[in-house]
Image (cartoon, rainbow, N blue to C red):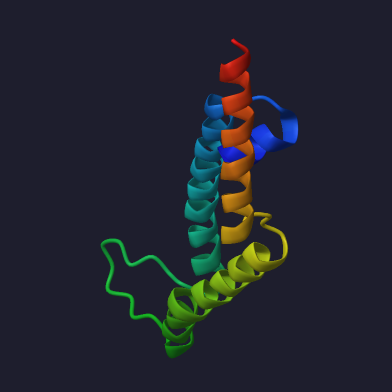
Length: 111
């Protein structure tokens, strides 16, 4: 992605690309933590802290769905995003490497 950014802008911004990636990952982790609590409340989960509460079958089925079906659906959405939106294929990466190698070689020969 850093090479792709250099091709697009003409500038190499390793720190900016990595900082954006790191921030997005942390934001995703925070949102996922919050959504977990919301999802458990939505399916009717009742906290059993210090009590002897037995969850209903509907809640147990909901937990199963949250732990299996939801991740599968989200992975499918991620796959589709990578296929249709993400610009880097093996061919494109190889082209970028060749373009940058030629650019860096011409810059070093002019120095």
